[in-house]
Picture 1 (tube, rainbow, N blue to C red):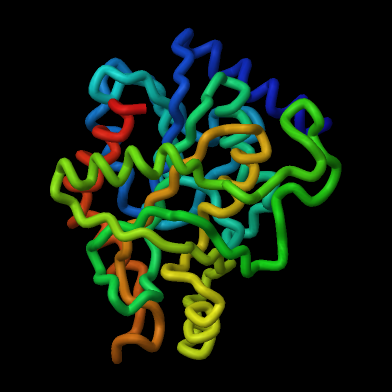
Picture 2: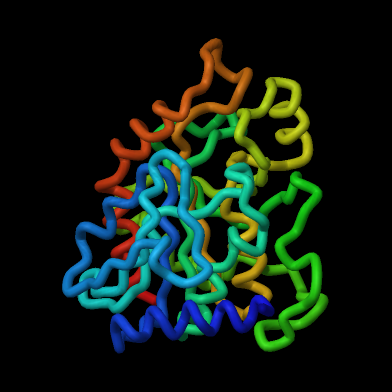
Length: 272
């Protein structure tokens, strides 16, 4: 079965559960899924119940699709995501984003928890993604192009929508939340980077590094969706501090910033 036909089957299943058609989509990263708890009148569908969705195995990612109202704005939220390092193909990693597009989503807000490469940043701060570096030597658009979704050779000069970045900065200032901005580097994982690799990544111009976000952003842009990316900086990248990295630290710090993060996202959505 062709990928597009699989997407249509997944879309049909979701529409059999609700007639709500949100224009805004959210992808909630490691430890950031509590935003869904603030939604009202929402329906929850487990990933594994949706045709052609996979089960997510990453710690801190529950694998639930929710559709409902966040502060009176209709949204669709993915509580969890797929990662390349789990052994999924990139087609599988980006499948939910493509389904969201077919459901009518026009704006995608992507969040993640990641490591700070820029030494002026601190754990617990947020970073607005202005651009990215794909360091994986792979791309979710490799293979047959899905002409129904976008062009064979999409422009990548503005993956992250400038207007949405302006809204995010204004809301952060209004809420007195520090919102750094910078370039996000995509690393396959699951091992964290070596100190030498972090030096390389910094030299290449990245301010943060993580194991997600870029494939979803690429396919969203391919489908002419507006994209906003926000990272929760949960730790300093390898070699910056004299301590070893752990995923538990990522989850702990993400949990600590949940309140300010949630306020920022809700404020942004209200302005879109």
